[in-house]
Amino acid sequence: MIKLACPSCGAEVKFQSKASVFAVCSFCKSTLVRQDMNLDVLGKMSDLQDDLTPLQLGTQGQYDGRQFELIGRLKIAYSDGYWNEWYTLFGGEETGWLAEAQGFYAVCFQLETPGLYLPPAKRIKPGLTIDLEPAGTFLVEDARDVFCIYSEGELPINAAQGRESFSVDLAGPKDQMATVEYAENSDRIYIGSYQDFDTFNFRNLRTIDGW
Image 1 (cartoon, one colour):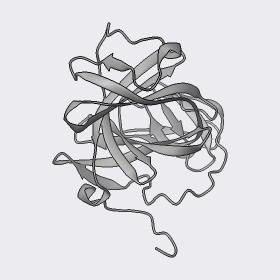
Image 2 (image 1 turned 90 degrees about the vertical axis):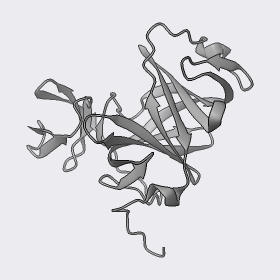
Image 3 (image 1 turned 45 degrees about the horizontal axis):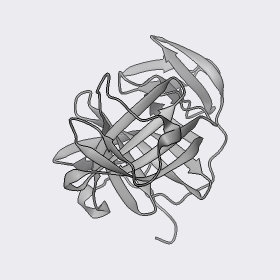
Image 4 (image 1 turned 90 degrees about the horizontal axis):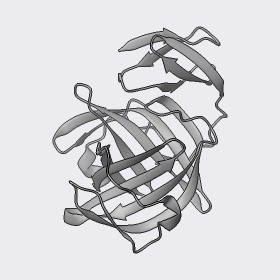
């Protein structure tokens, strides 16, 4: 774990993952980019309107027999709504993402395939098939322009408010799912699968009045 001081207020900012390059100060809400052992201030994160998610930073769960902890969050918006993407730290240095959308939960991991061909974003539409070897061939189910409306904790990408990207949801073989993110200067591919809420065996969930 790396502990640094927020340049704006001096509060301690923790980085549990070596892959994290962005954080939001929990005290003053400054958005920070890490350059080795130094932090640069990008701006401020606006307050979040409550979205009633039962998850929070520090929530722990289980996936595929492995324990993980939620250490960061992106809240992504599009024309018809939003969803949460939670940055997860497994044992050691392995990280992944837990997507939370309309009561569905999926865990996915970045697919590192240098040189893999992806169709240009402007050609992507539902019904198109994309070869994501070695994972297999996936079918495009949805594609839309999205932007970040909130982030917290630590993250492996610059997640400033207003960050724009083009997000593609795909279905694959053996109940797999995939997401392709077309973003400025980088495209990312994530492969994973859905899992029922109860099978995560979550701990340290939020207390929500009325639930």
